[in-house]
Amino acid sequence: MERLQRQGSQLVEMPPINYGAHILQMLWDIGPSKSNGMGLSPIDYTDIAAANDVAAMFITPWEAKLLRALSKEYSGGVQTMKDASCPAPYSPIIEATEDVRARVDRQFKSLVSGRRKK
Image 1 (tube, rainbow, N blue to C red):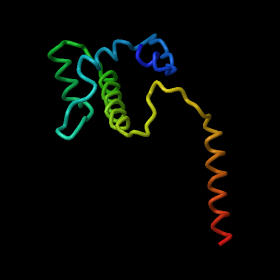
Image 2 (image 1 turned 90 degrees about the horizontal axis):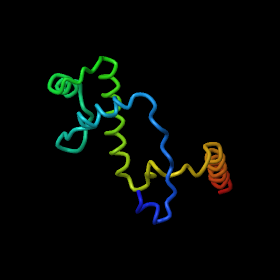
Image 3 (image 1 turned 30 degrees about the vertical axis):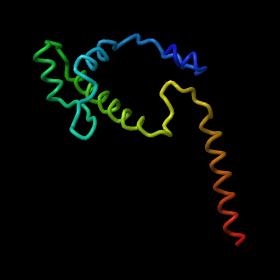
Image 4 (image 1 turned 180 degrees about the horizontal axis):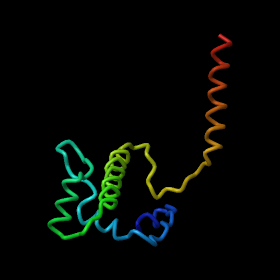
C-alpha cells in the first residue's frame, strides 16, 4: 500500500466491517478458492463441511451458503482481474454511469450517421 501511495495512486478507503467479520475469517480459514488443475474454482459444500467438522467452526446453513457465494465472487474476480483492461479494485470511479452512457450514445449515433452518408 505504501508503494502505491509513493507512486501517486489515490487509494479508496474501504468501509469498516461492523457485522459479519467472522464470516470473512471463516472464508480465509477455509480458503477463498481452490485449484481445479486449470485455475481457481470456488470452494464447495464438501470443503465447507470438512472445515466445519475438522476445525469445529460451527457453520450454520446460511453461513455455508454465504461462504459459497463469497467464494464464487472471489474466484470470478481473480479471473476478471487477469484482463489487463480491468481496473484495480482500489481504483476510484472516474466517470459517472450517465456520462458514460451519453458518450457511448453519441458515438453510436455518429457511427450510424456516418454509414448512411455513403
